[in-house]
Amino acid sequence: MALSEVNFSIATGGLGRPQPGKDHYSGLVTFLANADLPAGFTTGARIVQIGSLADAQGLGIVSTSAVAGVRILHYTIKRAYGKNPRLVLWVGLFDSSAIDVTVAKTLQDFSNGECRQIAVLNYATELLAAQVTALQAVATTMLNEYAPAIILYAAKTTLTAVASLPDLAVLTAPHVAVVVGQDGAGEGAALATALSLSVPALGDLLGCVSLAKVHESIAWVEKFPLVSGGTGADASDLDDPAFGNGTKVSATALATLETIENKGYIFARKYRGLSGAFFNKFPTCVAATNDLSKGYAVRAIFKAIRESRLALLPRLSAPVYLSADGKLSPETVDLFRETTNTPLRQMVADGELSAAQALVDPDQNVASTSQVGVAIELLPVGASESIIVKIGYVVALTTGS
Image (cartoon, rainbow, N blue to C red; front, side, top):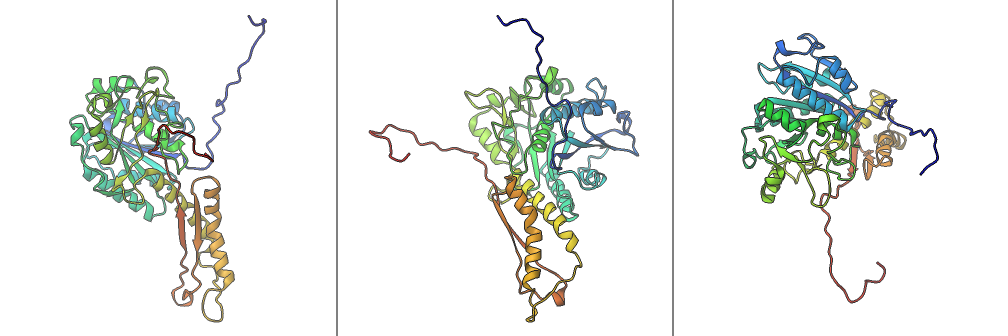
């Protein structure tokens, strides 16, 4: 028995120190009738930035609301902050009389292009491939306007048989990722049953994505356990994962799960012998052969675009010196190459890229075109989505192993 004493346990995290950089800057869009807007929102002020669940509750986004959409929104925000307490979040509540997913850009414009990922919660209408295509058009516009963000989408799937989910891998929407998984036995499941709606794990997805470094997969088992960060009634949520129609993952045939994954969906799954649950993968809505078929590939290239653009902006309309043969001078080539390489080297140092380089061809007719061409080559960071182990008996161990 220990000697009597007044003992202390040092708690950390109470200061809420900000997460470095802006990779955790995020948006969340959903749709409500104008008459159902929480107290902190009006038809003239539909977007508010928050930094905690308490902030959301202070705006009237509470679990006891009589409005189904507000209760689902509260659950989504609670789960997001459970995964990433340092999340910086812009919340946009738009008119549900006509579900218009393009308002994701309205939110991005309001944030001055700061959001690196935008979650769109559509609990009111069934999931359609056309919605994903529309969101890709939004993402393309944001990219063209120098505010790239990956879009995380969740829609109602209460009436959709798991095997009948539309095939997203045949689309060309590499900047959109769709989650169809939800809790099957905890607070999320109870909420879905009470409201007869899907309550997708969009908050968990947004929290994990915002917490992850841009090169990391949210399916990384060691880093992103889903049965964590819950407070109170949701403490065990996703330990018994399901799909939006209530079908349990545990009751779904392996072949069906593989089909759903191959169609480009994100859902929660378990591994035999390991406690907890985890996201299956981080696919986007495009063929698996596409370079941007993984959400982490999209986030990494978007960051490279943002950082290299900021590095090059000061060089706009600057003098460009030529050699006697009319080509770019060696000093000019070095200047543009090094300016571009600087942020790329930082991404490599931070482990967000395996390698990268900027190339500048000196044989450019800048005197006539007033344009300087720069090529960027990125070597991505992969993910061990499968580990193949060969095992067997031998008469002697291999030397040098």
